[in-house]
Image 1 (cartoon, rainbow, N blue to C red):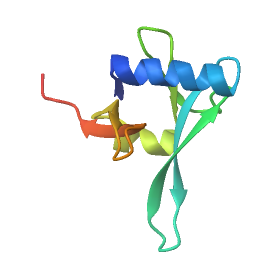
Image 2: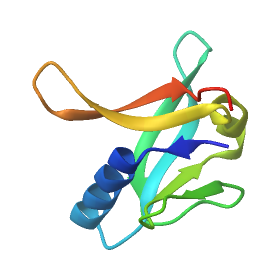
Image 3: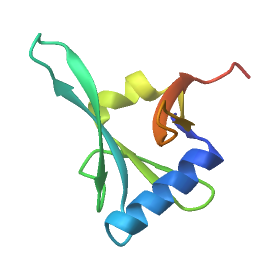
Image 4: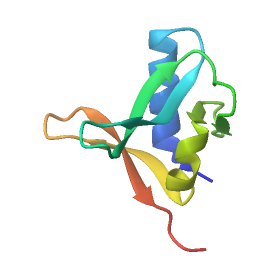
Length: 97
C-alpha cells in the first residue's frame, strides 16, 4: 500500500485546506498521446467509487484510482524542494522491511 511521509501529509493538509474544505490528493492513470499511461495528481473533494483511501497520521487523505494501485503499492509519497525552492511531491520505492 502507498505510504505517506509526515512531510507529504502536512503538504496535503495545507493544500486541501487552501483549495477546499477537506478532501484529498488523488492519483489516477491517464492515457498519453503515445498510448502509454501517465500518473496524474489532483486535489479532489472526495474519493471516487473504487478508489483506495490512504489516511496519514494527521488525517490527510490520498485517494488512489483502482488502476493505479498496483503501480503505487510499493511506493512512498514525499515532498522535496525543486530548483526554485518550492515543494513538489515525489514518489520513491519503499525500503524493504
